[in-house]
Length: 232
Image 1 (cartoon, rainbow, N blue to C red):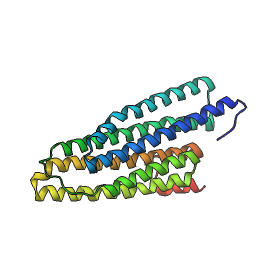
Image 2: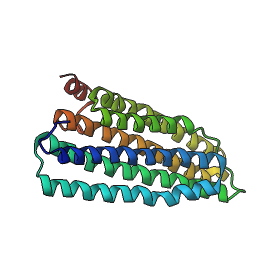
Image 3: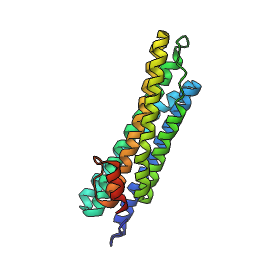
Image 4: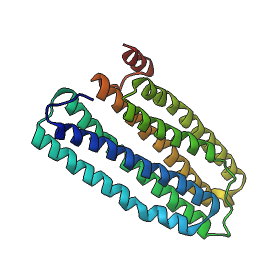
């Protein structure tokens, strides 16, 4: 990060970056706890995840306001403006990841409330672990301004997509063979889709890191082009 004559300005920029990481830590815990609730059926845990979504939303609102104040007061340009724009975009994706964690918790509640329903036995933990790892690495790339690590996260999104397709194929097979699994199978499918979307948002966050550091928008170019940009 560039240093300025006004140390207060540096402190303001560092503060919003730190708060993004705090928000990211909260969102990561939301995903982990939602998946624990899905596995264990712990309704207290599930309801806690749903309730804590308001905390994620509050982080987004407060950070948005801080960014608006810095723009109005400091009129940032060049690299400083890219930092602030990256923060604004990143917290939007973090809030949406929080929404996906809440959806997983709601699906967990539906699945465990109806004890008589037949639930297809599908392994989702590996896909969820991959998505959480992507989020964690995207946040680390943001913290360290590491474009190479950001490119690795974008590459990893293909693994999460492949996991989702595998789960979908398994669920279709279950539902065709046993129509009793259709209702809960759809709930499981929604969970798998939320995990896949978490990976997408982590990918977005990594692309913003490249923009912040390199000044190049890499959202709509191929992975190969992005890797060349990172290496340049």
